[in-house]
Image 1 (cartoon, rainbow, N blue to C red):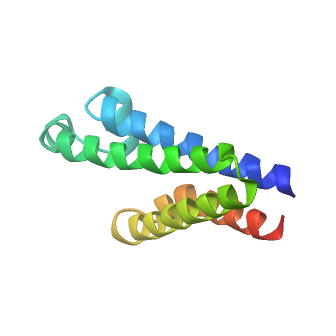
Image 2 (image 1 turned 90 degrees about the horizontal axis):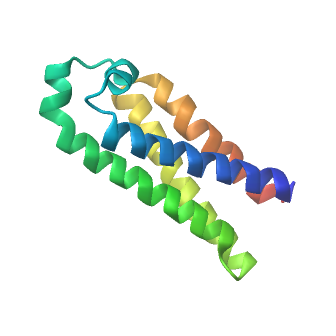
Length: 120
């Protein structure tokens, strides 16, 4: 169970690195426009906000990775739980305010990771 928990935490961290990349660097590019259903005009007008959002996703990824490599394993698990909880809250909020799909893509894997950590 411990290996599954670590794999899920790593998956969530990598997912958030990808979100950072999409929001900070691809927001106004064809891939970003398609992913977020934006027009070029809307994307250009909101690119600073998207970059800020991407940066926050990077902080979530950094916290999860930090928890995975933390020298004290018990404290590392607590760090992972905190950041997974943050991801779950962000995913639920995004699902309720933007698109339900966000809840499944963001909060879903984080919830599975948190449950695996609790059971490990």
